[in-house]
Length: 415
Image 1 (cartoon, rainbow, N blue to C red):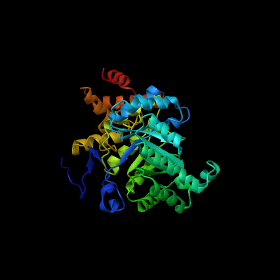
Image 2: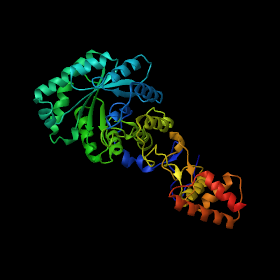
Image 3: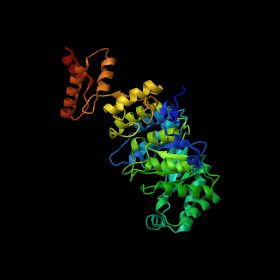
Image 4: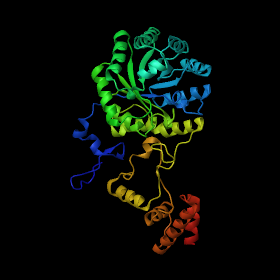
């Protein structure tokens, strides 16, 4: 629809949402190196399970993997076959199912891990190790030559076994020798074929500009190999890091639903998908209307509940109590036809609904709106009396008021 232009400006919309036009202006876009396609690699069942106290059974992994596949997640990391027989059985069961997604196994730089993943029916590997020189020397006990040779041997074997291979060198962002990073990946790519390489902000410490710097370096060094980013959320930067990586040229992101994962968790699948689609403007091929449903399933199964104000899937993010917001949203709807101008995205696009609620912050606009929805009329004095009582209840409850209680207040005043 056409909007009235006011002072040379009209709403910039996408999927029924009024979004920031500045994300799409030429001066911003020319700073980006956006890929044509972004591969979402969900790690809920592996890295998500590494959150202390979270355990997914074999049946739960099979069920969740099927649900992720249904909504179009292209890569699903099921687990680590070397860790448990349950993971092995989950892979074997899923290998007999006609999933569209690649079933990914985590494998260390161990030929035994690689063989086991193939035997269990994995389609590919998240083939990983820390490339931090201190880890190599003091944890693995290897010199640099043997370390690189071990990576190469496992990658070669994986390709011989017909597996998709991403080599991810984690703890990449705490290394202050760029030549070492370049050497590891150069030697791997010179001596073995891999499908994708990855870097990881394993402890969530990198500023988005730092991510931009290293992603661009990797694309400069290895322009013909797809690059993935794997990040954690220790400073609350995971979604920003993932989006910056994509804007800098990374073609794949590794994410976990509800931010499950080691310590503070991984970049949240639901946040990153919405950011890629709505902020960067790249279609993921994933059904966003199912994100909330999948999040709720995983909350139930993992027994980890998200905060009520969690982006995308928080229970209260589309509960609006503020009288000012409700009044503005309704006026803007009447003027522009946009139902959600006071919200960052259309809740219907992610399987949600807007709900106006009564409480301490309510205003007359909400009372009038609610009465109209109920087919009721009231005088100005009655509306004022209802509002006074609603505010009192909200203060006492320290919460919004359920519709049943609001109905009782209205009946009391109108009768």
